[in-house]
Length: 204
Ligand SMILES: O=P(O)(O)OC[C@H]1O[C@H](OP(=O)(O)OP(=O)(O)O)[C@H](O)[C@@H]1O
Ligand SMILES: O=c1cc[nH]c(=O)[nH]1
Ligand SMILES: [Mg+2]
Image (cartoon, rainbow, N blue to C red; front, top):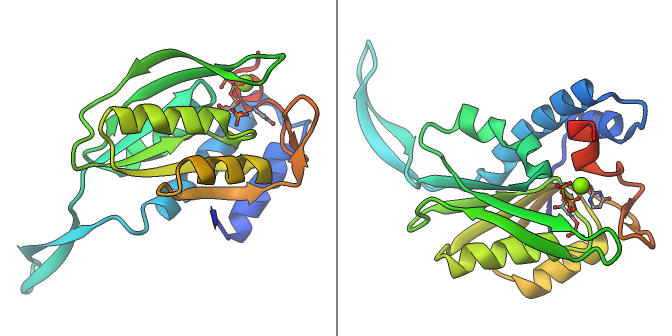
C-alpha cells in the first residue's frame, strides 16, 4: 500500500497544480512546495544517531541523521522536486536517471544515467507522475542493479494501475505519494491528473 501524504496544505497545492490555468512560474513554485512536504514525509523514518553536545546551559545527547541520503530525480520532470532535498539535507548526493515515454506506446526509454555511490545509503527516487509505473519500475531496477538496497519511490500524483505494477515489480520499495487518482486514459495519462508535468514545468 502506498504511503499517502495527508495534509490540508498538500491538498491545496495539488488543486492549483491540477488547475489548467496555472502558469509555469506558479507551477514550478507549487511543485517545489509540495516537494518539500513529500521530502519530509519520505524521510520520516531515516535512521538517527546520538551526538553529545553542549547547549549554552548543559550537556545533552542530541539526535543527528545517521544514514547518507541519495536522491535520484527521473529526468526531466523529477527535476521539479529536487531542490527540497539539496536545501534540507546537509550531505545529500544527487544521481540522475533519464527516461522518456514514447508518445505512442507509453513505454519509457532510458537515455541517461549518472549515479553517485549508493552503498549504505537511503536512496529516494523522485518523479512527480507514476502513471503506468513503467518509468518508476525501470528507474528502481537501474538503482538496484547499481547496488542500492534501501530505496523509496516518491511521486506527487499516482494512478492505481501504476502503483499496482510498481508494487508487484518492487515489493520491497515503498511508494510515497500525495495523491492516488482514478485511472489512466487511453494515452496512459492520469485522470483527473494534471496533464504532462514536464511540459507544464518547463513550458514546452
Ligand atoms: O508511469 P509512466 O507511464 O512511465 O509515466 C510517468 C512518466 O512520464 C513522465 O515523464 P515523460 O516520459 O513524459 O518525460 P519528461 O519528464 O521528460 O517529460 C513522468 O515524469 C514520468 O517519468
Ligand atoms: O498523466 C501523466 C502521465 C505521464 N506523465 C505525465 O506527465 N502525466
Ligand atoms: Mg513529460
